[in-house]
Image 1 (cartoon, one colour):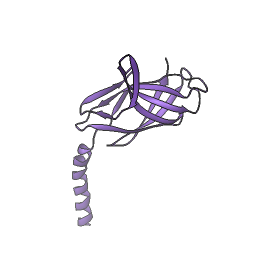
Image 2 (cartoon, helix red, strand yellow):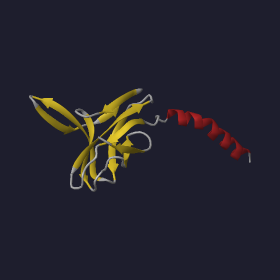
Image 3 (cartoon, one colour):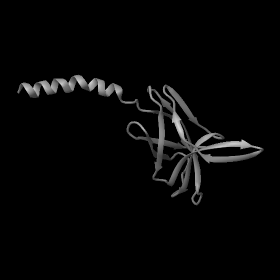
Image 4 (cartoon, one colour):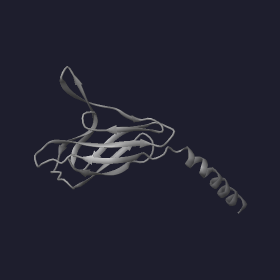
Length: 141
């Protein structure tokens, strides 16, 4: 009985240390996805990721039931030509990263259905630390 009680006390004392060392969950602000008509193969989504924790958080995957693939992309202008390429996204400790038109954005590809203004589109954001986050993106222009 003493051994079980000692083990329980040791576990309870260790719990705050374990919880304190886990990275904070990322906050997602203003998640928006652009509407898309039936047959349109792609659209874009935007948001701001806020990392309240002391460790950087790398976005490792984004999935959505509405699309075959979702990737972070970055738009750049070079010599009057707009270029897009896939981008790695790391949110710095106590920092934020904004996804916005003309810059970093989520490219939502191989759309499976129309996305109408007013729809709420859930996406799963996975990071290198912590549990995935499910975010509802509001469809609007």
